[in-house]
Length: 379
Image 1 (cartoon, one colour):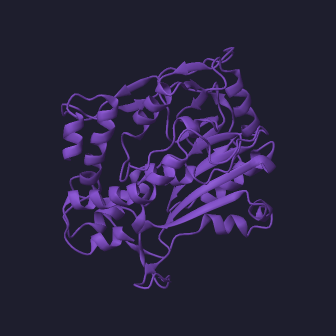
Image 2 (cartoon, rainbow, N blue to C red; image 1 turned 30 degrees about the vertical axis):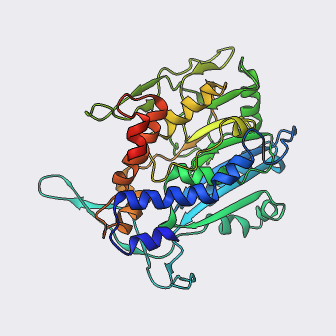
Image 3 (cartoon, helix red, strand yellow; image 1 turned 60 degrees about the vertical axis):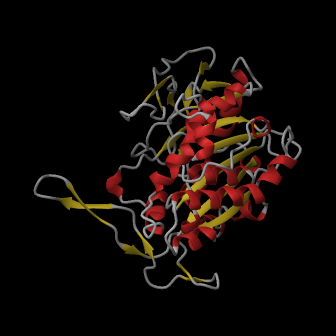
């Protein structure tokens, strides 16, 4: 709630960042220290899978859950931890929510073109977001998974959202001792028996058990009956920068794909935050970082570096077993940084101005010359 309090008056970037880091150090730091080097729960050797989902105002969450369970070979061994960041309505001073009318905002919608050909955009008022967990758990065909404790949820008001890295940190804390850990986006389709096939693919890699499978999945295909048709996977073998400055953040990209018939998965240098699969010991060796608020770019290069230096080898799965809904801006779907920009309008601060400071921490860990420890501490 301090996020909302800070938004009510003008604050400096330093004040806002310090407020988050102080809270994280006070409440999350002791928890991290208590479990450093050991799992929160004993890791079961039963083939169970924990699916970590960070969902920001996600209209496809219910469908994603249905597809995951429908296509699993062993749905009774699939467990979900979801961080739901929704606009539930207008939050009153006493903490209750008024969901009447249209208290929420759309994302930036493309509604036409200007005379010069540039897009014409607007943001509109809208009703509260759909609750994908509620829709899933009240569906008679899927209710059993909720009653059996296979769906674990943390709800967050969109005004308290601090980006995907922050949400994925909390989603990882919903893990309950499952054998395998998989992190994905929340707008996916799945291939038949995806759960069993990913386990077998990890076991086929030469470095198993310290193996991470990761890739950028292909987009949805029309007319596939919501079932992914397996296709040759691609390798995350390239990185580039899109900025002209002296120390732009690295961005990961795909390289060559598989041809088919390869005997083993190929080792790669990078982890994609939108999909990776590993044994749950990963959470012990590479615990999620609670000090990455407002972050969007930089998450993947940091995850790759920390995983590899902790002794985990990264591999590209030979087959695509999931598909992702890639979302062009014209769809007008809400983005977390739009909420941050609105919140800190009085301070004339946007999400990029806040995340630029946090990115310095990543650059320091990666070894950027212009991000020495003294500079990061000063910022």
